[in-house]
Image (cartoon, rainbow, N blue to C red; front, top):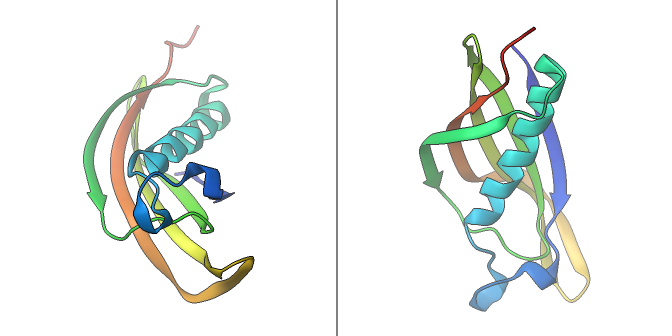
Length: 121
């Protein structure tokens, strides 16, 4: 199986709610980016997201966070790939321009999803 990991800084311009929170869809968009790389690596094609089977919002994501987004292929079909995703906060802004690396990452969002790729040949 293959695992792909991206890291992304969450800019303050993406804050959507009080307390500099970003919406839950922010991590889902990043899951899509990871899934695209998975498909490119496995199939030489960007693929298309077909569905999410399970999405769990476990902790808030804030502007100033650094997220680590991981996708691991857990099942491969003829044209489908089922991927387990995890979004973890690995750094968090602490005020002004200050930030800290977290001793223990915070699991913010988990999901499983299915992508499809064109038939071979």
